[in-house]
Length: 414
Ligand code: PMP
Ligand code: GLN
Image 1 (tube, rainbow, N blue to C red):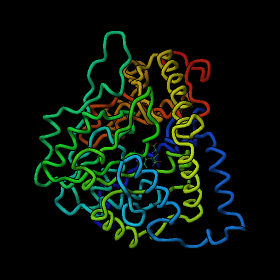
Image 2 (cartoon, rainbow, N blue to C red; image 1 turned 180 degrees about the horizontal axis):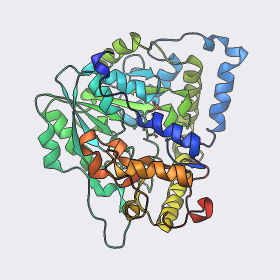
Image 3 (tube, protein in one colour; image 1 turned 90 degrees about the horizontal axis):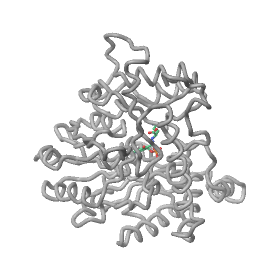
Image 4 (cartoon, rainbow, N blue to C red; image 1 turned 180 degrees about the vertical axis):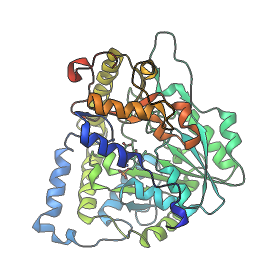
């Protein structure tokens, strides 16, 4: 076994996907929609694999199928307020996962530090380590909500002095994920300005994972950190068709940024994956073409999907309150984190276990109640898992997304 694999062999998704497949009746665990993608996208995929476009069964350009990079440059150029060159400022990847992997491989050397904001999408940590880097963690810290109010993901904030203390001459990059998985926090312009100022001051890269960019609720705005002063030149933006169009199985993602950074992502990509499935790229390109034509209109998928999901969020919030959990209302994404500390005294516990309480609770819940969710400690580094061990994450991008006594025969406890 190569040294780079030491300590990165565990994977929360492998474990919990298996548990959910075995036991769950209601699966609110892994994040993917279980409703169909929009018709226009499925039709585009059908056309792409039909006989009339048979060349789409063959290789395409390594760094992105031309129609896809062109439409991405056109749409995001508009959103970022700058001209993007489809050939040098955009690269298509096998999902956002591979985009992340390319970034760490391309920029991180032995001894480099990468700042990761906790809680974080779990793969950042092993990917930084496999590149030889050292992750440096900084937590979002919860503030008490107003009397009688539910907590919001906006109540989880960075301490500016603590964040600043993590930057040093060893810092190569910071990973930003807004809207954030798992909390659903949408970073405000002020919060992003704080991060941007530190990046500029310390000449640090920003790897900006924006896969949930369209899933923002209550009229909140998704601010792109690359559009802040001094940031375009040091930011790699990461996106995912899986999240954008509810097609996680297609594994089409992308990176966008200045050529001085993207040229190195191309080196990693051409020497590992080479390119992503042609037909899926063609269908995503057609999906974006349709969205560009309907931009901002009520029948745009980027308008319809968050509207639908906001309703599901609100129903899940109510149903969790009814069974005695304390939901943290997310401003974005299709995830919701709920406080389960009330159950600590009631749910059977294993004494002297090394496993965090939330993980044991989530396993108990899926085995005994048929309800799958993900423990929040999975989104913290090893040293911090026990500080946040009484929360679980639900995904509400599901047809059946409400939990409670009537669905699951859940009586107290839970
Ligand atoms: N980043 C975040 C924050 C995610 O939640 C996901 C979901 N898997 C990814 C990246 C990876 O996306 P993809 O499925 O496109 O590889
Ligand atoms: N991003 C999804 C989630 O957070 C799925 C991740 C995965 O399966 N690796 O649930």
